[in-house]
Image (tube, rainbow, N blue to C red; front, side, top):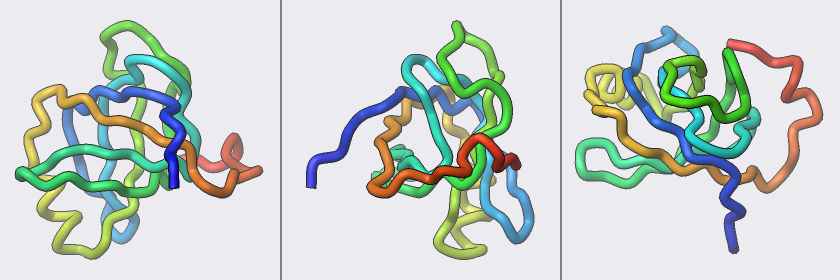
Length: 110
């Protein structure tokens, strides 16, 4: 399966939304991010791919501003706690188009 790159996202910091997932706070370096897309990032020397289940703020690229929060679906509470305590240090994450489009992506919010 070939994944279609749609955006690059800079992860500045993280916080936990109990029962929902982890929010990455940062900015879209280039491209467009949509709910349902897959974010690929490296945390604790492990490459991870997780589904974006919420987008808050701007959904198109802006220059060097923390202006977009991405709610990430985690595998379990342990992963949520682990990622909440992760220090991403402005790591570049890659966003891929989801396999099935979500027609409600503009209506869903964190």
